[in-house]
Amino acid sequence: MERMPKKKYHIRLSGEERGELKAIVGKGKTGAQRRCHARILLLADTDGPEGGWSDAQIAQAVQTSIPTIERVRRVCVEYGLARALERKDPERHYERKLDGHGEAQLLALSCGEPPAGFARWTLRLLAERLVELEVVEEISHETVRRTLKKMKSSRGAKSSG
Image (cartoon, rainbow, N blue to C red; front, top):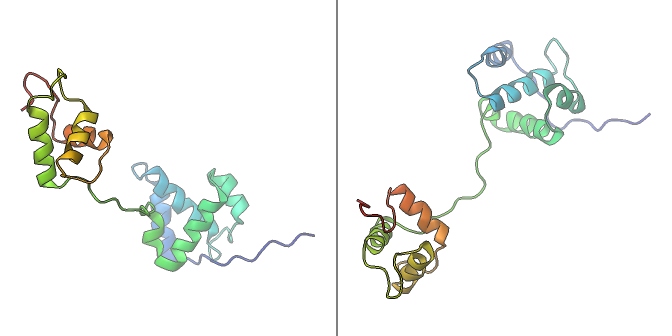
């Protein structure tokens, strides 16, 4: 007979916490991910009426992966119930390539005359010119596109203001 590994993170909910999770599962307006995590915690609760299901049983019942269940268990034990119900924080943070001054220079460039031999500015031309002017060390045409879109600017349109 194969022995199952012992769980490192055991879920033991109070009656109040169990009631809160049941309310989340019962509400139709709660996000699907939040309801899924609430169901995982209810089924994993060793003090609950069901008695604490295995991760494989929970995965089948909730239709999610075992790593998700393990992560929800760990976060609940380490950080608490509220944190276990929320989305995972992004692991990386990206610094903005263009600050307000850089955005102003991009906008001024895109509204100005295009380089000789071109009928209009392209995203790649704008990116190259920003590097030439030493506004940034490097920038992709996609960052230029997103920045112009955010500023609701249209390159070369009759009225871009």
